[in-house]
Each structure stands twice: as C-alpha cells, then as structure tokens.
Length: 454
Image (cartoon, rainbow, N blue to C red; front, side, top):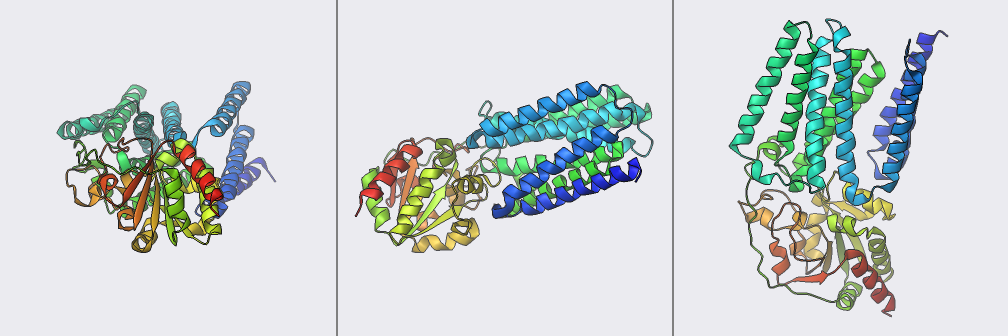
C-alpha cells in the first residue's frame, strides 16, 4: 500500500471515530465513551498530519507546540470547576475559530482560484467566532456586563462592520488576495462577533455559545477545503451541523426564534424590581421533616448547585428520600446553568440515574401533583416574571412551573438576583420557604437531619 492510500485509510478511521463519537455523545449514558472516541480520533488526526504532510519544516517546534497544547488541555480539563466549565468551552471554542482564521490567512498567498473564497470565508467566520467567544468568556467570568450597550447603536455598528468586511474582501480579491485586506477583514469580523455577543446574557447565553460553536465548525470545514484535507472537512461539518441543530433545539425549547435571541427587544432593558423584602425563611430540620413525609418531591438544580459543588450532597438527599419511599425526580431546564447540558453533566457526575432526570416539557405537568419542590439556585429558570412581566429580560422564556407545587423550598445564599439580573417574585409567594446559606452546607445538614429521622 502506498503512502497516499495509507494516509487516506487512516483519515477514514479518524473520521469514523469522529462520527461515532458525536453519535454516542447524544446519550448521557454513553457520553463518556463518545468523548474517548473523539479524543482518539483527534490524536490519530494529528499523527496523520505530522507523519504524512510532505516537507514538514521545523518538526521539533511543531511537536513542542503540540506537547504544550496537550499539557495545557489536560491541566485545564482536570482543574477547571464545573462552575467555570462554560467559560472554558467558550474559550476553547474561540481559540478554535481563531486558529482556523490564522491558518487560512497564512495560506492566502498560495491558494488557488478555486479555494480563495473558502479561505476568505474561513478568515471571516473564524474571526467572528473568536470575537464573540471572547466576549462570552468575559461575560461568563462576570468581567463585563454589556446589557446596557444594546439598542440602535449596536445595529448600526454591526451594519457598518459588515459593509467594511465585505469591502475588504472585495478589495482583497481584486488585488489578488492581498493579505493586508484579508487581515483587516478578520479584525472587522472579530469586532462584529464581539458586538453581536456583547449585550446578550441570562438564559440566552447558552444559545449564543452553541451558535458560536457552529460557526467555529463551519470555519474549520472551510479550512479543510483550503488545505484540501478531507478529515478537516468532515470534522468541521460535524461540529457545524451539531452546533446548528443544538442551537435550533434550544431556541425552540425557549419558544424563541434565534433572531429574537440575538435581536430581541429585551436586550438593553433594565431589570424590573418586583420582589419585596418579605420572605419566609425556614430551618434545615423543618425542611427535612417536610421532605421525609412528602409523597412526591422534585429537585430543581441550577447554577447555585454548581457554584457550591453540591451535586454529591443532592444525590445523598435523593437516596435517603427514596429509602423512605418518597418518589424523587429531577427537573432539568434546557438552559439551566451557563451552557447546554450543564445540569445533566453535574447530575451524571454524582451518578444520579438518567431515568430520574426529566426535561422541562416532561416534568412541568408533574408539579401540580408534587408535595415539595427543592430549588437549588435556578433563579432565572423558575422565575414567574417570565410569564407576565413584559419588560423583563426573561419575558416569554418557558420556565419550570415550580410555583404550582404544594410547597417550594429555595436554597440560596442571599436574595441576590440571577444571571439575568431580574428579581424573582417566587420568593415572596406564601407557599415558598427560603433556606439561606451555602447550598453544600445546607444539603449536608439536610442529610444529617434525614439520617436522624426514624
């Protein structure tokens, strides 16, 4: 078998691993195996590139950079907290888009007539993803707010940047792919991506992260055409397609179009203050008694659970209640947390049975027949203002109908607002009780109280 045939054979194996990995990632029970498939496929792809690319200059430098990337990836993956996982996803996604744009820019002087437009498309999409992901990262880190910077000026700025990028692309083609024009287009696209993501927050952020991920995949696929690399085309197309599908599914789950997420009138609105000071606190021993003698309990995890790293304590509470004969389910909102599937990952980490995790549309009819709902964080996705407060950033977003249950127990550190910056009228509902304190400590106390109940 000659080198070219052997190379194509390895490419096919790597592509098959990518396809199978994405397929397995669709099931929580097989997601870990899918992740391994994808990792092995990527290692194989890198090995193929290093071995078979002819006249690979500076091999030691290339291997050194690859080694640094592996070390940085392993170190960050092992040390990052679940609360910071969305930021890491946004950061890695932006780096992927930026890398694709730089590769295309480096190849620009030598591309053929047939691949000039894929190269330019890669530079624009990759830079757009980089700029948007960088802003998403900073917003998730709460380094910037950006909500007050929406409105008319944002639309005018995006229109100007779009025209500027198109003009640079046209000028670059007319000048036989002038590199300076291409780099200018990259800068304009990066600014456009940053401006696009700047005012978006709250429950819309996971949708935006998914959209930017799709753009990174498309830029990688376009890079494959530039480099004439079929594996890169396949991998980029998989990422682009899966990201697009996920974006559509999340938008539908929120009963919003993608256009309304990006351009919705809620952008730039100020938060409405609707919650008075009066709330009804409760102690852990009283919560334990209510849970112990309930027939049905639904646990609603949110970002507060991730911050407290209390998923193991939640599992202990669930196990104890089930031991008492209480029916326990988990209500999972599609955009709870800061990224798609955030709560599913947390619950899987605690080995919560997959059949206990019920999505919003399935769990909502069950709240009316539920005795006690235990809400851990989850401010925005349980906020009734989303139904009625037209000026709220959450208006129109489907929520978990926890207010329909017999009793609602909310675990929070304080009366602070959620990521959307909106007060939650649920907290002053007569049927709601507030258990203040760190969620991990509160749940650990609940475990001790439940264990002490005969």
